[in-house]
Amino acid sequence: MFRETRRASRATTRDEAIAIIRTQNYGVLSVVGEDGYPYGVPLNYAWLDGKVYFHSAPEGAKLDAIRRDPRVCFTVTSRAELLPGELSTDYASAILFGRARIVEDAEERKSLVIRMTRALSEEAYAALMRRSCVDAARYVVVEITPEHITGKARAKQEKLL
Image (cartoon, rainbow, N blue to C red; front, top):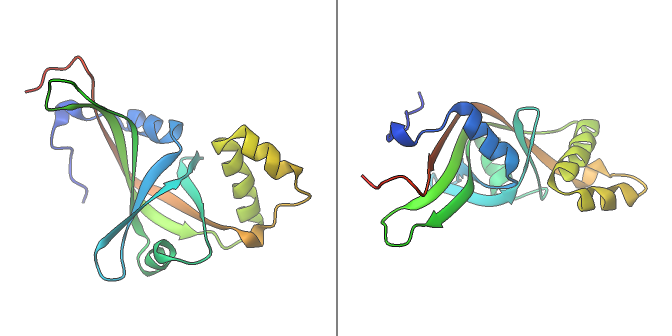
């Protein structure tokens, strides 16, 4: 169902790809747009319990797309540096294919907002905790359950083929 990485020499292990996703907090979510065109949107996220979570405005193109078709692709790059004098880049990236779910339960949303905020920034978590309550009704949280994760990397010292 999912294609193998074309350049196997650049493929990371699944664990290395997960490490890229786990250690970053910014990626691009791609969905099938209303008109059939791909729609990609950069966003902050948190990796919690083997899944990707992000919060969203209560309405918009990405939520409409997820409601129509929960299949998504999520891409994360941990480094990308053009190599001087070469036609290549030092990079590490991961691609996650999965299914998105809009979290409906208010208590689950509240818990996830707290956990996501803490994962993204201790300062943001402290600010959130200073509030008298976290109003789960204000937040839309989306969970992406991975079905396939792959990664690629190229180090500076590799020779261009």
